[in-house]
Image 1 (tube, one colour):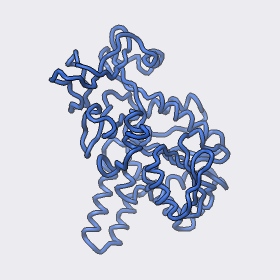
Image 2 (cartoon, rainbow, N blue to C red):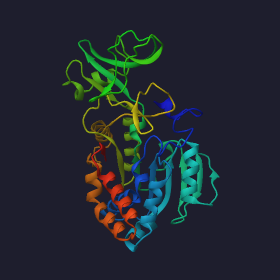
Image 3 (tube, one colour):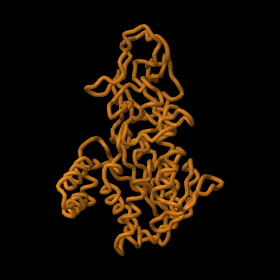
Image 4 (cartoon, rainbow, N blue to C red):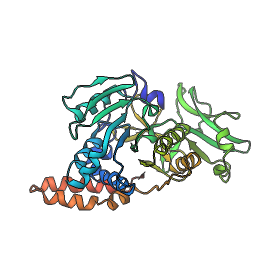
Length: 366
């Protein structure tokens, strides 16, 4: 997954702008998403006694649309403006040079982009805030309260997949060659995504490891997977757990801060969720490596456990469905106000359709 998504020359994210072609994210659907998310951060700041200085961090910002919409929302009205005034600087974690250029153009306009020891720096148009780009979360300073956003970040991290056998957990690996076992296929509920080839041609396909692998010991050592029956499959993402620990450490270094993670997933153990998207459709992840978006559901339950184990003093809430979350933040009121502000019926319909799309039950949780 990492190679296909972030290879410097051929990676799906690093070699193009896929947004709108193969998939679309919530910030790109409507400004309403970023506007109501900005309220969540304002509420966290107020509940934490309005720290005088704070840092805003977004991990995997895409085109920068979400950050741009939040900055614009914070600049409106005296209450939200007080939060904007408290922001000391902004940090974006971005591995794609292509997306970095788009983020800079949107957020900073003609303000110059300067090279630093750990990335790049500039100044935002809204609020005139210092903004920094880094490739690694380890470059995020922990000297201030940090308010973080991870929107559709964890679902792009590489997973390990396993199947429980009478001999214990066995890892499912990707092989290349003529498939000997036509039954070894991955599928989503009600939908076959990777089918065994009927042609005697070499292909990428899934095989089961014959013995324990270092990764399979992670499940054997966890009580969370003990109750699963023989034949059950499970996916784990060690990299996501590592990120959860790193981010919680950054937040706990200060008396204040918060992380909002919005992604596809649940608090149950994911299985058979590895899939690819191309032109808005689910396709085989093995068909065209580097030319399709690869994703797997996020195990919010595992992330919560990792955070609790590292920082037991931190409060972990959720997950909740995105629609419920946005409705609680007042997106319906915001949508109605936007509709009322338009005279053209087509504009009214476009706003209402975007609103419905954002609150649909599509498996996105926060």
